[in-house]
Image (cartoon, rainbow, N blue to C red; front, side, top):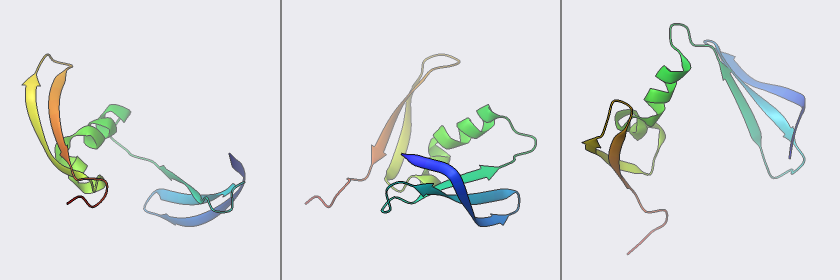
Length: 89
């Protein structure tokens, strides 16, 4: 469980602030990031996060993504190739 009563500002710059939150568990460090984006909406941000081209930058396990079928205007079928979670021989 995370307590949000006490916050410590970790960093702030270029419209993004990162705050460290208190936690009941001393081994758990919790951060909260806040940012303001002008000229984009939540669906623009969502599209960047789920697109295979951008996934390479934020998902270190991602190797490749291939579009198998464009089913409809709102539905696509993708095949994602990921790296193994642990060393495999």
